[in-house]
Amino acid sequence: MDLDTLLRAIEATAIATELREGESWFPWIEAIHVLAITLVVGSISIVDLRLLGWTSLDRAVGRVTATVLPCTWTAFAVAAISGALLFSSNAMTYAHNSWFLAKFVFLGLAGVNMLIFQFGVNGSVDNWGSAATPPGAARIAGALSLLFWIGVVTCGRWVGFTLQPGMGG
Amino acid sequence: MRTKALLDFCDAIDATALSQAIQNNKWVVPLVQTIHILAIAAVLSSILMINLRLLKVAGLDQSLARVSDRYRPVVWWTLPLLLASGLILIIGEPARSLANYFFQLKMFLLVCVIIVTVLLQRPLKHDPLYWDSRTALAGTLAVLSMALWSGIVFAGRWIAYI
Image (tube, rainbow over all chains, first blue to last red):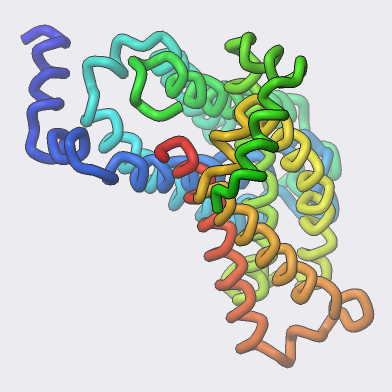
């Protein structure tokens, strides 16, 4: 089964059809998606700015992440579920949109960056977490995370302007 | 609200050179919307951190005054950026925004949430422990604040659909 066949099958599911043809499902779920994304990006940037040594300097990195990351992951789960629903409604169109694909490249990069940080320099966070300026590897992880998430939001917004008319700008 | 005066005002903005320039450039609106959303992200997350502390749900290793000092400036410094980016979007698409029911609702919610934010933050100036003894009211205002901000995001997205 090639990819397009799979995408058509997704679009043909009962839930995708209802989302596509129902009067107001799409804007409601889209609004939830936007709200969730803003909380993901805003909260993760609190951690990123701490890793860069710019803000929350009176607080150890471990304390900042303990407060913020539960919010980030909760919001991410909501963003992923609402995003999957939006995708299903027009799977073919999204999968062939360059901005949509670029968004997922940035999302993937953000994920890889997080894993490298998690299994790398974060292993010794107890040693450096209280310092105002974290080590170079942590600062780079923070800067890249900010960059990648801004990329996700930018591409995501452009998706709305590059689909066929009537999809809501 | 779609009075004739309002629609005339929209037409007048629409006819300006600046509005025409924005309309004829397909990059400006998505770019400014992206900045607007990133600014919303900064405000919303800062408000969330303060509200979670007000509700005693997170950040309990720090005093409310300290959490508020960390995030309050983000809110007040980002609001002008939100207003400026919003203004560019209005000039670019005046009728789509000003005469739109959801835009009007969004502005109403914005005024409400600014009042709630000031009510929460003012007492801390003179008494950092003010809310510690008023848990119920603090929690209510915190929940109200999150609800209003969520409403602002929802109304903002719905502008595109009517």
